[in-house]
Image 1 (spheres, helix red, strand yellow):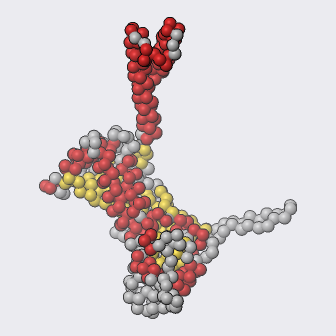
Image 2 (cartoon, rainbow, N blue to C red):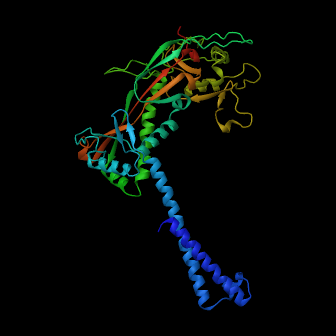
Image 3 (cartoon, rainbow, N blue to C red):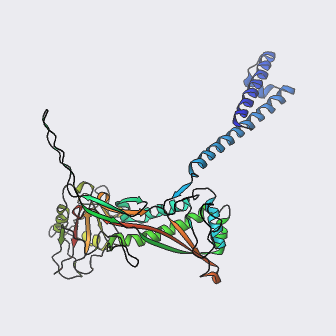
Length: 426
């Protein structure tokens, strides 16, 4: 029965119930509020049945509402996705796709998993689009795990591209009444090539785990568990290159994202310690101020600090030279040491990454970066995430290799937007 039919039935039954109670009130000269306690006979039985029928109708209407919501969600989430890399539609957004995906993994082949407009491939290395719910969970895990990804400008691109970075700003001027306005052509100097580099994560899944994941009650938790681990693993490898990658051009055998702390980055705002020994990074309060003010004032409002734990430990230990050798790095005035490390340094947010060079590494190494990551350090993820399966290599152990891959690149869009601290080179 449709919701409209149920609503009509409810209205008719409600009116019939109302009429019966009105007759009872007139005949007994009592309020209908006393009906349940006083009434007897056929009318009492009929009213009780009608009330039960109304409760049943209300429950059926609630079910219709839930179904309508589910249908609407299905319509919005099951829109065919277009894979720009392969020029085809995929159905990874289908609510049942995740289950079919794991069934295919269990069989060792993605044959029959995908739409008719993609030819099936039963050979080793056959691939399929990762389920949308799984990809979303992987990306979420990447943001939770990645520090540099959190503070940077992350974009999704559908192909290789070149980004032009302006070398001059447009010119503004005071314009008096009827005075001529002089437009200035904005010029673009640097051309930055974005070539997403493939990062892969190979997971081994036991046959028992896959079979349990396919079960009606297991698929959600199984996808979440696998996705979280893939996301963490991929992010840790990517973040290491976002920190110190060489930025080498993409070739058949080479290519890395450009890391913010790569030793050969040609920063113009560099502060060095006074200690020449590689084992003694004697960063001082003066050094930190030099780094802070070495960054142009136009970049400071959105700037953050990025460093390794070892560098932060050195800063935390800085003390006054007199007056009781008090620590210079103060915790928030509203708390105490039990609340942990303060979230700012010289008034700007501070982030710690395990992939930043440590404070006691080789000389001339960038260990502290201060700059506007959100606008001038770009992370470029290639749209789409896919998988391949290898059911053969570990078949004797009843293990299936699930290989997930994603492409990404990172670039410093303007060296002027960063100021760094290095250990002395001599």
